[in-house]
Length: 289
Image (cartoon, rainbow, N blue to C red):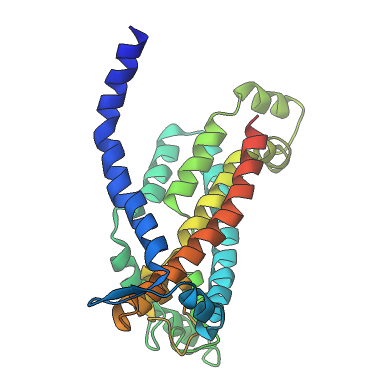
């Protein structure tokens, strides 16, 4: 009976497994294979480690990784902090209607197309955009600039897109973790006279530390692979100030018709992600035990 039941579950899972293999794993193995080839739209032939040799001597490759780590470091710190802050504020609202209202406010942006959001921010950062107009109104005209056109500020401008930097998915993860805290712990902290801030630092954050680490991992993975932000806003410019590995993969493939080289960059990105995410995931597993 158990064997029949297992077979039945397997049959139900088979279509999903087939789709995952075709659309997830096949492209991965194809990229690994083609990273050892000189491949363009017309032809493909094996060149061994030639692409990897070129890649590790490619200045654009190293610049893109430097930019990516600066961008990701800012995003991880800001988004994690703001997700915790937003979740704590909503969690500590005792009026349920008001609490649900703010949840909707923080969740609704998820349905807005990313391209629309990016175009709005492109206008905000333009020389005649909202940001510069505000600076003019406060007599800070000496600070104004073309934020996305200046190599010194372009990468940081993109990193700070999304004010108040509260990502919906990360916010919901932290909020759900807070809601799962035993209410008796919170009640006892009130009886002991602990302030809300002290309770957050001594009870909430230690208990939800695994979810905070999960948010860090997810934010790192998503932002390290980011392409659309840079493609829509700057296309890697000015110069190489906003070139990142994901965008370099796109440009190598579709701008320069170097599909094999593009696969090589993608493989290195995957290996680097695994080298960082796997140790973090093992730490997460230890916390959950």
